[in-house]
Image (cartoon, rainbow, N blue to C red; front, side):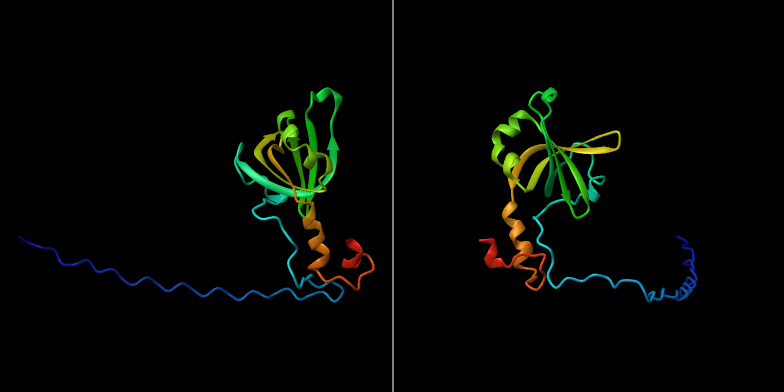
Length: 162
């Protein structure tokens, strides 16, 4: 049996080092990047509004935000439309009568809601069909207590919140 000599593979050429790129110099009148001593309180496991394009159609997701609009048109046959806003944008919520009956108190009185449901898209607009609605308005108090903004007159001192 005859064997062929082993093939010789030359060593690959080393990759050239990338040229260092100049870092942009900060402009003298530009504002510094904001830094917070503590992170803002965030509801666990919620998708920000600016990432609603990422999940596939009909995915089950959770969002949270301040209620900025409640609509109950007479022609909608018991459907309620909510608009929530977080730091990154707005989320349109559709609450069918069956869900409204289960979560009535949160839908009517909640200032900060966490909503879980199915994502729908129509004409490049995303809507969340609510399946579970939770009133997490007490988390708003964390904005004051954990951020330590006692010197800012725009924020009430913690003892005035009780």
